[in-house]
Length: 104
Image 1 (cartoon, one colour):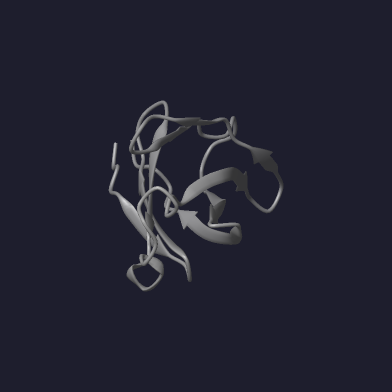
Image 2 (cartoon, rainbow, N blue to C red):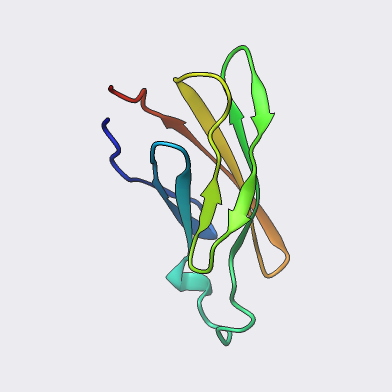
């Protein structure tokens, strides 16, 4: 299968998506412009991931795994988009990305 990582950028965070067979990994990074506070206060996090298409919507299981989050893909087949909600120092941001259809 074709599993190329994707990168999306918002105002507060950037997220690298690494697709896989049974799950995908999401790495969340802060932007340099807001990287002024000590690292303990500067901890961007993902609070919700929703998969959606024109017919369906599903909140996905999100598991923190140290440096990244593991997400279980939706029950339906491709193509679909992800809405990723992040939080950084009490500020919320929603990012959306359309995932390319996986090639067998």
